[in-house]
Length: 190
Image (cartoon, rainbow, N blue to C red; front, side, top):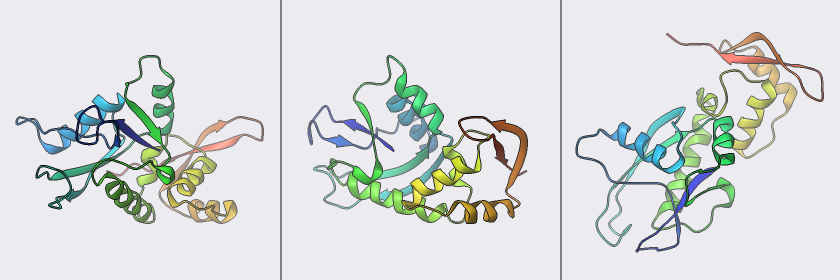
């Protein structure tokens, strides 16, 4: 899911766009990205990284260079925020595989971010940024499936992760309709 903002001024009045804003002269880039996200979604990112700089000459009516950040937000916090009364106006969450036409070159930016996430999930712990601190293997697999856009074999996924040094089983279980599922967490790196 991706938060989009409906533009309230020209150019592209009424079009959906990625959240963005101007850099305050007294703040650094990371702080500006966190502030913009908080102003747009009322959430703090669990992961924030500079993605790319976009500066094609024709990307905006006035010469604009965008230093784009991408952030991951925990699904449980996003769901809680979206359910609250008084959630930020003018913001809607869209499935990344079904985005509407976006203002400026924002479709290109969203496609690049998704490509980067799909590549990065293969060699890093980035999926942890979308989960609570403790999670089931099924929840982790579902994150991978959502990011990769494909179904993964549950048995092979479990076998791969249980042989990893990255995950630690906790003593806790999540109960539901089926048998209790053990909760896991990622190993803390020093």
